[in-house]
Image (cartoon, rainbow, N blue to C red; front, side, top):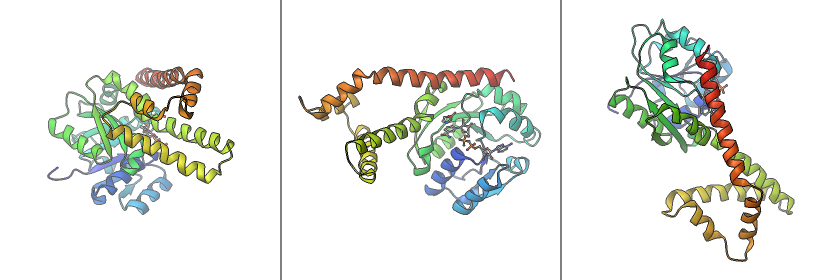
Length: 276
Ligand SMILES: NC(=O)C1=CN([C@@H]2O[C@H](COP(=O)(O)OP(=O)(O)OC[C@H]3O[C@@H](n4cnc5c(N)ncnc54)[C@H](O)[C@@H]3O)[C@@H](O)[C@H]2O)C=CC1
Ligand SMILES: O=C(O)[C@@H]1CCC=N1
């Protein structure tokens, strides 16, 4: 990026803070990041921690945006966009919506004009620069804007672009919601280890490092996860018993059902919110 764009966040909750924290950690100038929200507590947390600009006035800050990130709950996005239509009347910022299940034609309709819109599904590990973001651009997005968005989200993790907006339901179910699945597994693994007699602190430390080590290994290795798994399974050994127990318990079906429940909820939100 030659001249860095002014990035304005509408909404200052969990996901906005994770992205802002990651951006600042990557060296993005705090003076070029602003956030607006009704919650003074959320704003104070961001200005104290990252020294970014904050306000409760969506209108004034939106009018200054080169990139406007919509980071409010899907259920209030229509009201927020409708309210922003007039301050954006003579402006043409790149809109990036991170709201689950809200489709770009609805955002355009609510903002009252055709605009370059990118839908992005990030995740909270963005806070520690380990985010995974799926992105989709509508036809109005220029090559330069696409690159700007890619650089922003690459600075907080990895990016993958999709060409069909419909695939965003699956991305939401995979990487948007995904961190929670692994936190659940960490909880369950830790509790199970404690039951074998290990102190909780030890179980937590080794459990988390095991998840991290396995993920890093899968990322760096040319081998598929299935082969990496087999490499841990000595014939007649301990892992084989555990993996057999997972398979007998239907772990694959459990994943398939959970991921499709999340994707279906994303579709449901799209239908519900589009009808408002
Ligand atoms: N939490 C997550 O892991 C992820 C969330 N998302 C999406 O990010 C969006 C935000 O989610 P969270 O950060 O988790 O929610 P949150 O509830 O933590 O934050 C929402 C923020 O919006 C603010 N807000 C409420 N009304 C507003 C208004 N009228 N104008 C401006 N700001 C307003 C709130 O004060 C709060 O700062 C959602 O659309 C969600 O689908 C996407 C990927 C992952
Ligand atoms: O649970 C949710 O609806 C949001 C979207 C993906 C992660 N959190």
